[in-house]
Length: 230
Image 1 (tube, rainbow, N blue to C red):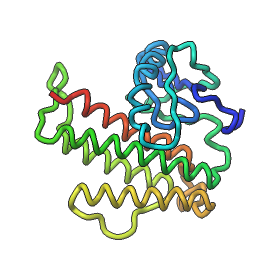
Image 2: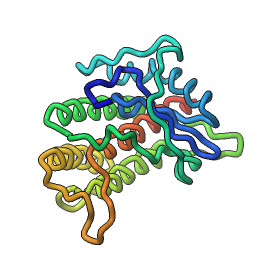
Image 3: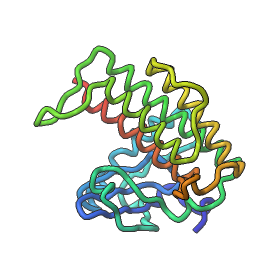
Image 4: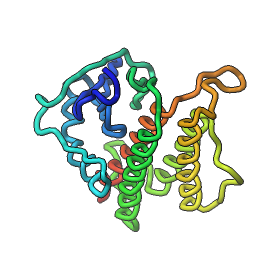
């Protein structure tokens, strides 16, 4: 089934030994994990209203499902150590399909929505204490901000693209630079200007793979901040 034939609630499952991720084929960023398949699907359903809120100001038209009966699992694969660590690692077969101009435009709109949700979460945590876990674990707001930017820069390199110029020291400026570079990198990928392998032969991420991981990571930490505001 190709990209255009996907229904809004077609899903994939990435099943690790200790953790499973459920994600939506057509909605990068709407991806949640759990200890098993049932928990992952329940977490995905629970996150649907949050995902809808993140995309509310965009023209993308996401409609959240009402129950788990709306879900259709169309693909599954074995997870990796990264899956068990707590991050989705694989991608569905549709991510290998051509990334055309329409999909580029849709992807940029989706990422803009994710960044807006992120900015709102960061602003809401200004001057607030973030709750820690039962053992005192958990980054503070600025550490989470730095992590999201640093990870985004790492993901961009996996795509085969680098932000131009020297990175500014201010975190907000560095994030803005990253956002601009992501747009440039995805456009270059759409035009076929990025080789699928790096200079040392390593396999790069394609545009859809990059989009899926980046959108998930931004929203995952935006929602973490929201959940931990004291």
